[in-house]
Image 1 (cartoon, rainbow, N blue to C red):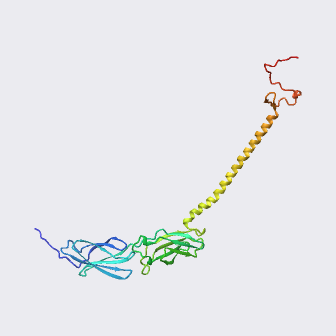
Image 2: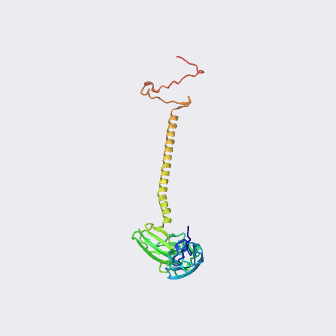
Image 3: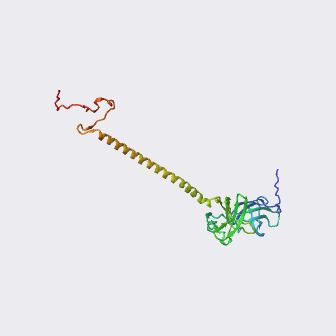
Length: 294
């Protein structure tokens, strides 16, 4: 035996499992489940969106018979903070959650150019890649001094450059540029950050490597030049010495050359001091010269 029992739906229950599926810069996709399984009729939900920054409210009506409901909240602001509640249209118990939209991107190509007594920050316009950004909103610039451990707000501008003066020698700085914050500094863009730690030499990091390379070249090139000059002088001295030795040998050989014999005659030194020192040396006889014996 069995019996079928049908429970009476309680429309005072809150929606279940409310959560965010995906968030963007100007939208958020939320999802929830009906208060009870398998609704047998359309259910009207009230989706209330409260802007925590602007302090404004909007209410949207969603009708669905599905057990799982997905809804996209549009016309949100980048970097905004919202409180979302979902409940049945009869003002039953509610489910709530908080949503933070994606902030604007950081400016691209942030770089530093060093001048005599100041530096210039340059970056690309954020409007080139962010359709939700208007140049009239502008940018704000912050600076962090790592030596003093202090963060300072330098100001804002609607241009794509900013002048920074009165920097202290020997201090390391980090500069950040972002879309200007709105409504009490709560809706800001992502910052682009650049380190500047070459104040001792008055150069920015992009020029530091080339500066170091120039310094090394200034040392290496003269050393190589002096080495080449020394080697050249050494070769010249060796050549001149070789020429002197060759000239001395030639002169010595010519002084001992016998035109009659057609060759040079050198003494071994063993007969020095003999009485017949001045007698001519007999080197040999020729077959066509008659020998005369006295």
